[in-house]
Structures are given as structure tokens and as C-alpha cells.
Image: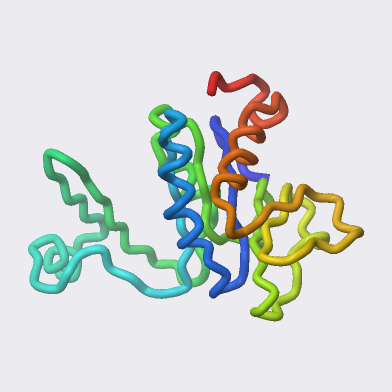
Length: 182
């Protein structure tokens, strides 16, 4: 399991299930509850947050191992790594300022052990992650759950229901050892 000072909840599914779409709808609902949310997204692609021709991009490409871009409204840190392969979730969590957050949501990292909601679309014909992954705490799908599934079943297309589940999960004493005042 991962180590964090605040609750960490993942959304795990195969590509094409709609993880990002769901999270874009879920984040505003959780923010309305006063939650300060950190987000970690796993990608299998090489990516840049800056554009060729911009000073920060050109400086990083010229050899800066770390490039921090700052303005009055936001800052971003790009770090070049020597490693290849997938990032480690714990390393990413450790980079967040947890003192400024109430919850960390994670998109992806489906093979790591931490509390997750499995998202499933029947039309994709992908295998289930549960029950092989014991860290899955709920199942959200666009169809019926199997009768033998012992997890809460959520409607993948009902963001309000998923938001209510997340809120209830945060209220549980076993999430952080204390009740969050939501």
C-alpha cells in the first residue's frame, strides 16, 4: 500500500472506459464540498506541457534537468528522468504538497495497491480487475454487477452517485483514522 498523510483514491480501468471524462465531471462536485484535491494522472505516452518555441521548452531541451515555470497564478515543474518504464505512484504522491490538500485522486496506476474504484464498460469486452485486485473498494459500470461481486456497485454514468460514494468513503474512520469534517 502507498503512504500518504491524506486519503488517496484511484480510478482504475482499461483505456477507453472514460476515466478522464468521469473525473472532469467529478472534480467540480467534490470542490463544491470544499475539498482541496490533488490529481495524479498516469500516461503511457511521452508528453510535454510546454510548446516548442516557448522559452521554458527551449531551456529544458537545451539541457535543464528540471525546469520550473512560474507566474502569478500558477507554476509547473518539468523533471527529466533517466528512467524508462512506468512511474511509481508513491514517488508522485511524495511530490505533492499534501498539507494544502484534503484528497488525492489518481487516474490509472491500476496495478499498484491503494484504494480504487474500478470503472468498467461492458462494450469494451475487457476483463475485470476485481477480485484479483483486493484494493478495489467499489465497482462502477454501465451495466449490472455480477451477483457474486461483494463491492458497492455504482452507475458509471451517474456522477452524483459516484461523488456521494467518495464523500461517504472520506467520512469513514478507516480512511485517515479520523473523521474529516465534510
